[in-house]
Amino acid sequence: MANLRPLALLLAVLGCALCRHADATAFEVGGDDGWVVPSASDGGRYNQWASKNRFLVGDIVHFKYKEDSVMVVTEADYDSCRASHPIFFSNNGDTEVELDHPGPIYFISGDTGHCERGQRMVVRVVGPGAPPPAPPSPPAPTGAAAPAGTTGGALAGAIAAVAMALPVVVIGV
Image (cartoon, rainbow, N blue to C red; front, side, top):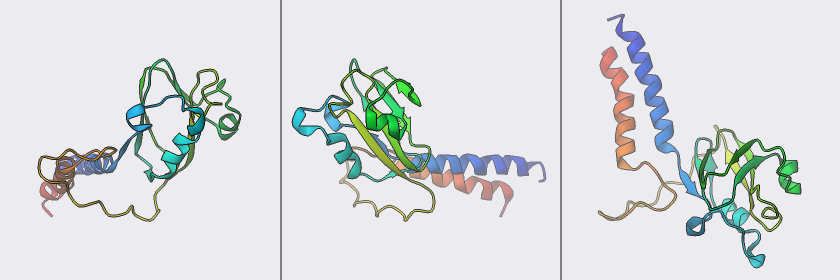
């Protein structure tokens, strides 16, 4: 029985990792339009969108774009639209960034002139110890698609429940 303890510990750690991932939300930046240069009358669109969402550590922001880029930058570089020393850079057209720490995270386009025209965003991430998110909305009717900006669902919840129950079964508690 003593040889099963390391296995039980490993399963518990894996179960916690699955639970965290199952609770993560993937956000589509810009909705159907994706990550594009906003029109002159819509320069604050990304920050308006970000302010309407609650981002938690572990959530993912997903950027879809063509012939552009996404950068994570410092606050000073965000304020000045300076793209010379990014913390993170991607230009593959389909970029996911995990929000791995609480506080503000600053995103800009690295293409010349795009940030100045409003293609930038601040995401404020809530960390551990914050109040829990609002309760989920009622389940969708059978056969309906999951709402945009969500991941997981019943299958992820079931996997997490099984993963958390395994150490109890293995240890015999």
